[in-house]
Each structure stands twice: as C-alpha cells, then as structure tokens.
Image 1: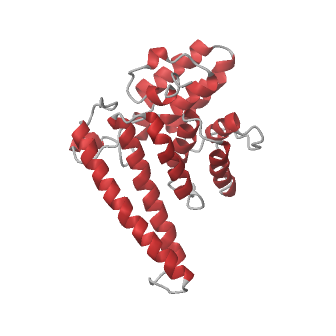
Image 2 (image 1 turned 60 degrees about the horizontal axis):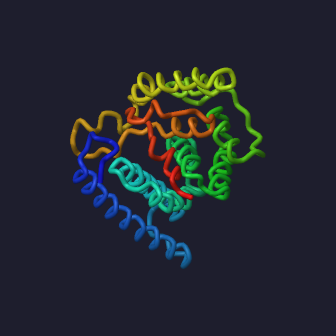
Image 3 (image 1 turned 180 degrees about the vertical axis):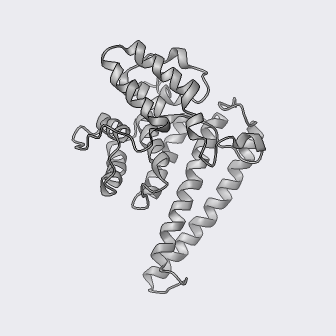
Length: 251
C-alpha cells in the first residue's frame, strides 16, 4: 500500500489505527453501559448520564474521524472509506455544536461531497448546522450544492484565517475557472496549513508519535462543486486528489 501522506510510514499509520480501534471499542462499551443505565433510570456519575453520554459520543466521533483520516493518509482504498463515513454521520448526529467543531463539520460536508454521500446524510449534517443557527458562507455554499432548498446565504466565514480565501475561489469561478484554480493552488501552497497553526494537529508529524495526515478536504470539495480541472494539483501537499477521483473508473 502506497501512503498518500508521506510524513509517516505505513507501519506508523497501522500502529496508530490499532490504538484508535482499541480506544473506540472502550468508548462504545462505555456508551452501551450508559444507555442501559438511562433505560433503567440508574445514575452512574455525579453529573447526568446524558451529559456524560454527549461527552463520550464527541470523543468517539473525534477518534473515528482521526481513524478515517489516518486510513486515507495510509493509502486505503477510498471506496472502503464510504461506510466509515456513514458511521461518522451516525455518531455525530445530535452530538455536534459549533463550539470547537467548525473544522470537523467542514470536513464532514467536504468529504460527503467528494464521496457522493446520499442526501439523507447531507440533511442530517445541515440540520445540525441549522439547529445551531450557524451562518457561514462556506458551509452554505457546500450544502447548496447537494440541497437546493437550503435557505441560509451568508456572505462571511466564521474563521477568516484561512477560509476567507475560499470565497474568492468561489466568486472568481463565474469569470474564469483558470483564475479560480490559481487561487486554489495559492490557498493550498501558502495559506491552508499556515492558517491552522492554532490547531492541535499542526506540526504533529515532527514528534513522531501521532499524525493523522494533513488534508484540505474543502479544497477537494470546491474542485468538484466548481467543476475545476485539478490535474495540475495532483500530488500537491494537502490536496485530496484520490478522494475527488475515487469513482472515475467505476461504472
């Protein structure tokens, strides 16, 4: 298997997946215990079971999402990742808030578009965003690609660094796809990674302990939505080319 993110070896990724799998199983067992206690009206902790459950689900989602990204970085067949994505949506449902969850939701929307996930999944995600009353132009643009009845239409992004540049990529597409592609390439080369310097995963490859992979999933989604020719982006760091083109040869 050829790795897509070369900053870790296949063995390092495999070892990491083993740890994620073990942790996910522990969390799932704990969740089952809590669900049983709730059904029997038994309080297990000093805080309400439901609050503990929400925390457990959030942790499980993070663990599963990290595993998903690790598998992609390792070189896993993208077709096999589609069922993993469905599981992520199920875990995230009713357990997401915009507080600390902006990037996670952006990844879920973007990956869903690239993987051609079904409308049901997109509606689950969009409903969570609507319930949180989130106004974000990038969210709106991606959702409208799949759900034409989406009503929100913001003209700003919640996190201008680095996502403000995506609005320029989108707005220039009507005038020139070449210009949009140029701006996207600049975004990938000079803005995306630097713009996430405050994220916990930034530069984690340097420590050799844990590294899921660095991927600008929204860039792949924008290419698909805008209909850009991304042949010049193939092999460019952070660009998920294989996820954009996973079904090119599937009939």
